[in-house]
Structure formats: structure tokens, C-alpha cells
Image 1 (cartoon, helix red, strand yellow):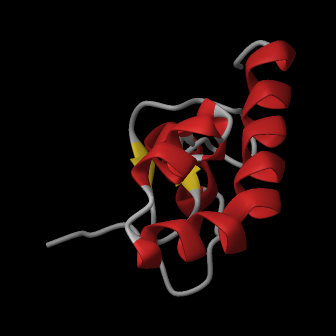
Image 2: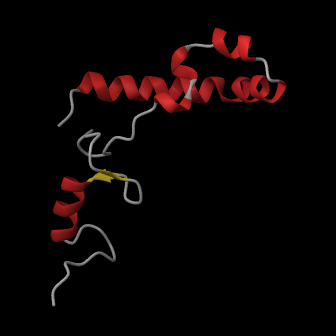
Length: 89
């Protein structure tokens, strides 16, 4: 499990991105790059990290399910993810 501080930091970044989204869009439409530079660094959506909703792990993240590969495997084997079954042939 990821440290709580990393998870909270990512939540704080997401809130900052949401707060400045409209202003960033206006500045980008105008082409005012000096104004964009004055915004906080964390206002850029590039700085957000995809994290597992359960464990907070950032590597092996599956966008379709919103969890890491390890959490996905556990959930799939336990039947917790609808429509996913273990392959057998």
C-alpha cells in the first residue's frame, strides 16, 4: 500500500487542477503563456498520477478498471469484478 502522504498529495493536486481548469483553458485559448507560467505548477493536469483506488499503487494501473494489476487479479479471482472470468482452455 502506498504511503498516505502520497495519496493525499495526489488528491490535493487533483483539487488544484479542478480549481484552475477554466482559467488555464482561457489562457491557452488566448496564447498567454506568461499568464500560464504564473499559475501554480500543480494546476497542470500532467502532474496528476493514476493511482489504484484500493491500494494507492501507481505502477501497473489499469485505466479501464481504476485499480492496479494486483488488485485487479485478486478481485477477478474472487469474482468481485463483473464480467471478468479466469481464462481456461
